[in-house]
Length: 142
Image (cartoon, rainbow, N blue to C red; front, top):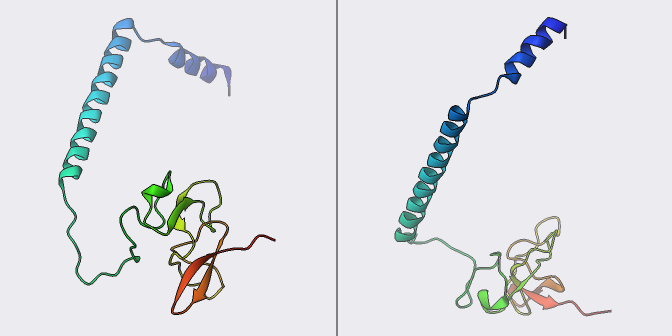
């Protein structure tokens, strides 16, 4: 970069704003943040009032009581449906806990490659075929 171009860029960047223009920008930013927050709260409130319509004839993951569905994030097993526990699933790559299959929970059949499919068993359990469905069984310790 030649010196004249450098000097012109330095002058352009070096020109400061006045206190009045800085204060004006600060007030405008605060007003935009308040307005954006109010809009987000209005969207949340309207979403809570809306109810989902049920879809007839649609199949879903088998339910075994109240609580969160298998595959939902959780903090305790009490949040999950019965026979599901709040643990890291077998396909989990980190320590995030989800409602995963405990002993006797229904699990997904393996795909063509032999990989498990949803709903997944918890770590320490294996999805095995028993009777007419796949269920999670505890892996024996060696």
